[in-house]
Length: 190
Image: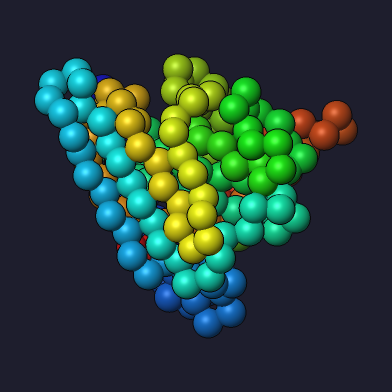
């Protein structure tokens, strides 16, 4: 069982709310969400999650728009489902060759000094231990919509959807161009 510091979660939630409200003024349309639908289907160990996100602008699929994505927070900052692109970092066996989009289940943590201006940081150590880190979920992007389906709820700690956010990602790389920190800045939330 993971213990959660309630104070840090409250601070994170306040930061998330303030950051999303301030950032929307200059936000690209693809990071501004106008509708989010989520549904759990099935029963018991066969429950799956489907999520559809509609944005205010076409989602770039040329791989040239930088590192960004959409996150489904299901268990506070643990077991976060993300649809993300961050070329040229290659950390997925299922990355789309042009857009770079792929899915992960990650754990987040409070930002370290390397990510001090971010809302969250990817917990690289614990995320790598998750069997769903390099998952081959069925996702698709079309115009202003991105969706994922048939995500086993057990991969998400059997938790329900708490919130959905769009985000930008800033990697901090070592001398070998491998990420040592991944800084997450929330842009919008639904």
